Image (cartoon, rainbow, N blue to C red):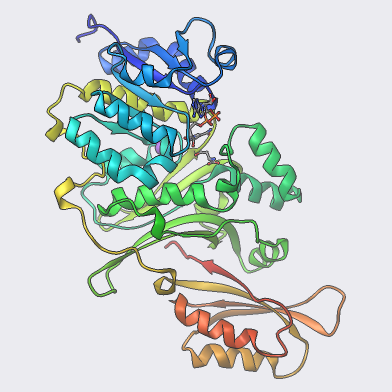
Length: 444
Ligand SMILES: NC(=O)c1ccc[n+]([C@@H]2O[C@H](COP(=O)([O-])OP(=O)(O)OC[C@H]3O[C@@H](n4cnc5c(N)ncnc54)[C@H](O)[C@@H]3O)[C@@H](O)[C@H]2O)c1
Ligand SMILES: N[C@@H](CCO)C(=O)O
Ligand code: NA
């Protein structure tokens, strides 16, 4: 073992939740890490906006500066660890680090989902690595699984709970009946939420992560702008309850799926609240935990579960990447794992399909006048559109005896077709409120 070599030196950008976890894990496990990496790994410099806060978060022993450009160009730095977040300054600094011949480790899913193509091309030109395990599902080694463990497979689909904040909110609301705002504040206090929590609750963070998984599962370029994104802010407690009565849980899922039935092939890439059968393991993932199911043609479905957010769980992924980079940095760049898991000249151009072309089954809730013939009219419209019904539930709608809630589960159909049927149903005078529609996945 070449443990007499000098340690690899990090330039750490940021001094927040994840950065402080990285410093702690590197310090606590340094002997174990050296045994694994064959070399020590040490923080040479830190770049942070607020020096006093950075010292308070990371301790006094580190060389901290507010000149982040000086860190990424410092000849004494071998690897830049980008933990500031955002897509503007982070992009500048990461590209500058690459141009200076540094390897980069980042937890920044927004940066990669939006600028990944540019960043990976720059890294390949320079022969440096950009590692990003922490960017998807925090401490769960899902990037490693997709890029390495599952390479024998033609991946068919991936479905994941990949945002801890929203899963925490849905769990606490369901189990404790707490309101949305209270639980969101708690998620922020615990360090799960993004700097801008609308990214969490509107599904954007999950879409960044689904975009990255889609690219490395199917060997396509990052296409965040094509993702369909719907968060949890419009979810109503009534639908969470009705879903339970029908044997389902509602989870915010990131889904990406290969569609061989479309001429020339296509990829679904979407984030939305989803009914999942309550008996599935993934339906029982609670709190800030994450879980990802990957279905491959050879292996079938595999499930990855663990902490997707928080200081040390995320640091676990960052430090694992550091060990990887330490082991591989002297390897011929052509023999490293390609950034998107497929060779750059073998990427596929299968398009990301529009939401109209996505195929799922649906949960519908209609507030209707309690009159004879209403159900027949509605099921008639579904039949006209060749949408078949799986289950129907009728429930009293509060105290008003003239109204009732009709809950319908459908079999799979194209979303465009469902939209046509929905607009016809919505136009009926006996349909008294906007129809609620939630997509449903069996995840077999
Ligand atoms: N917190 C988590 O659980 C978690 C999990 C996975 C990935 N991530 C990602 O890790 C990254 C860091 O997240 P975090 O939770 O540690 O954030 P944070 O807000 O706790 O820390 C960010 C740090 O970067 C500094 N910073 C931000 N913008 C800066 C700028 N323009 N110039 C200089 N310094 C700047 C801040 O002062 C702070 O020290 C983000 O990309 C985030 O999406 C976070
Ligand atoms: N805000 C993110 C952090 C981890 O990426 C979450 O809640 O999952
Ligand atoms: Na991960």
